[in-house]
Amino acid sequence: MENSVQELIKIVIVEDNKYMREGWTTILDFAPDLLVLNAFESCEEAFDSDEISKANVVLMDIELPGMSGIEGVKYLQKEYPELIIIMASVFDDNKNVFDALCAGAVGYLMKKVSPEELKKAIRDAYEGGSPMTPNIARKVIKTFHQPAANDEGEQLKERELEILAELAKGKSYAAIGEEVYLSVDGVRYHIRNIYRKLHVNSRSEAVSKGISQRLINPDLSE
Amino acid sequence: MENSVQELIKIVIVEDNKYMREGWTTILDFAPDLLVLNAFESCEEAFDSDEISKANVVLMDIELPGMSGIEGVKYLQKEYPELIIIMASVFDDNKNVFDALCAGAVGYLMKKVSPEELKKAIRDAYEGGSPMTPNIARKVIKTFHQPAANDEGEQLKERELEILAELAKGKSYAAIGEEVYLSVDGVRYHIRNIYRKLHVNSRSEAVSKGISQRLINPDLSE
DNA sequence: CTTGCCACTACATAACTATGTGGTTTCATG
DNA sequence: CATGAAACCACATAGTTATGTAGTGGCAAG
Image 1 (cartoon, chains in turn red, green, cyan, blue):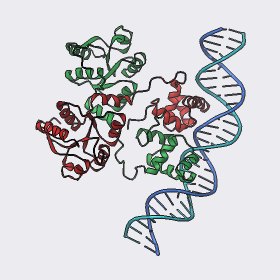
Image 2 (tube, each protein chain N blue to C red):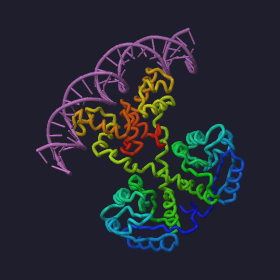
Image 3 (cartoon, each protein chain N blue to C red):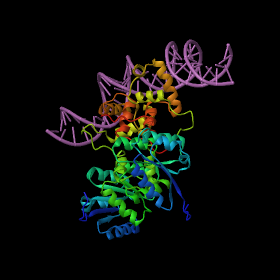
Image 4 (tube, rainbow over the protein chains, first blue to last red):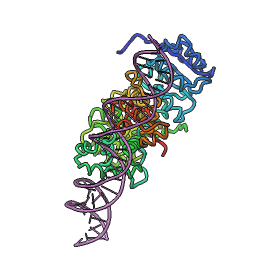
């Protein structure tokens, strides 16, 4: 896949601040492998343009007049699924970050990135990576970490976690029993304890809490 | 926060391959701001050592004889919550990656990283970032993306999502009916469709899939 | 040794869920 | 207008779950 011929990455910028927009354009256009097709000050303008359908990468501000960056990503994601979108913002609050990522952005940069980092980020995204400024990356990774031991005593035991995982798979008590070598009533015994500890009284609530508290891992394999 | 005085980052390496271990040690020790306290060939040795409690960053292989890297992370995470752990592996399959991250690692590198990237990754992790090789970062980000319109027509509709969310809360059909102004049988009607679209046949499986595919947001309220 | 806790087994029952089949209304389309 | 898809309501029933109550054997602490 190594290509000694320079592959030109075509970029569209959406950013309402004139200086930022022109600064970025200059920085990127200066690189021989990057080409800014056009830079717009709103989603509306960008989406109406001819350039948007020809771009490989869109660098999009989150805070925009009119259609927000988040809305913009959703639209682009639907209309041009191949398009690679990198969000940029001065803010790094969870809402903005996760909304942007959920909407389909593959990267998230703080606006203070250096010119070098900006160029690297665009190449990285184009080549299948997900550029993020370090604190953003950490925020993202943290969503995978289990919260540190709740409130003592009500921690689920190994066996209980095991059974909770089976519950999430939708197995019947009988099937779970076979899986973990217990009688149906043995399974019930543990489930009672699980419900008590999680303060729930139904299977689906238990699964829901179990996943959101990362007691069990959602199935990310498929 | 800029510190002109070099802050020394103390590192422990756990890697069973001798050449890899020595290679990394050499690379890292060569940097003036990095210090490899010690390099071990197994978790057991590392955890018994004096150095482990003094380290800032642990660089850990996933595939290890005896205690695996994943188990190792879990142990370290519990014993030394401040410790920063970066996983390294030749493999980038989802299971390894997400197990490692869920266990508490803040970064994940492919073993083929260049010396420069390795040093950068350790500094990045130490400063609050989450170093990942590009394809890993993309995998992680992809977990946030809604699956692109599966196979057409099998997308859940607004009403179905609404009801799925109620299902996750553990409400009975009757309670859901009151919530969304439907008869119990009306609720059933939608649930059937949800099950069919998600290819499940129980409430908890639906909730489980719904959360892991980000159709509904896990309850983060309490 | 006996007291208490734990993991498990056992049984009973009300409630809820999953699923099939069929009906009504509404609304867009040919 | 006829057709068909959506969205909803209805009823029936087998199967599963939630919960109470109770008993057993193991094991550790007093």
